[in-house]
Length: 483
Image (tube, helix red, strand yellow):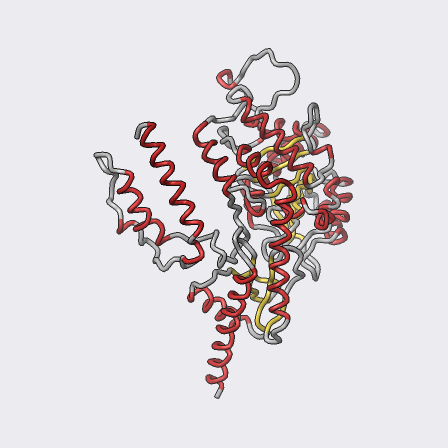
């Protein structure tokens, strides 16, 4: 493909994407295909001779699209949102074209410096304490990770290294292995499975802290478990506080937990993967109160802030805690330049070496929406969630199972878990909308997350009407069985 054909095909691709987005509400949100469907539709090996763009695009429609779950459909209410906007897509196109691998400043100065500034912009949008910002000569700063899972792993490994060095400095006879055997990481029983997975990869013990009746971890509960573990000779070193848990969007009590972690010399990491975007709105910023006690904080603009995947933003108070854990400087990665002042090499802030120019799409989105546009988007989703909540509350066959704070509604039919499992099965089998469940204590619960950028009140009303019709059918079938 030469430059002239690229111009032609590039415009065609933009038209294809625009048509896809424009007509997405007409597509079935969840595909009909069975596992293994695709292998039977394509050859066993790559073609020896070139094929045309038209051939490839025909097969996109014939092979790929029938197997796509349409996350950006206004009838997709599963998991959490995955962000999508036209400015972000354009930024990603430019990122792909520039194609730099920004592992160090010298590898592409703009790639590094725009990221540092964008993380400061976003930090100020959510009113993060200045300690977390890079500024011109700060000790903290932000970095883009691939996901909140990566951010948790990176901070756990940094906390582990910091703890090992601190303990061995006081007792040099202890081996690193001996310390590792006693280290314990903690998180809520509502925290994402990626926290436990980080501990597994990091080779440390992991314990869950029981949450209260609102599914939040409280200070007294953490304090009790820490005391028990210290008495047993263990070394607590890392705690993940969750803001906006995956099952029900509950919030751990940072202002109770933070002082405990600070006194006990435990690294507190805050995972606000979904909820973090809402903190740009002053009315939701109180949910982040207590962040000043944290060592690190992460959320995903690629969930709810219109920045396409992948873009997970991690801030640390002390960058040396990260670079001290991950820094290796072989000769081929060293650079010598005459620049004065502050130089960041982001390869020391993450697990992979390579990294894309992801801050471009942040820059495009922040400038083309503005803070007010992004706030309006968040507020609209929250309003739609409360619309759905009110519809549920008007039907006495249903109940709300957790406080609706942002864009997630946890609900169920009053009755057995089996009844609710059957309802979810009916919903997803019909494929008109898509939902996923969770367990809250012993209850099987349906999660309704407001996800798509294009979702409107009509889609919420349609979803509820569909759910209640299926519920009526189930209850009638159950009644007939009893008779």
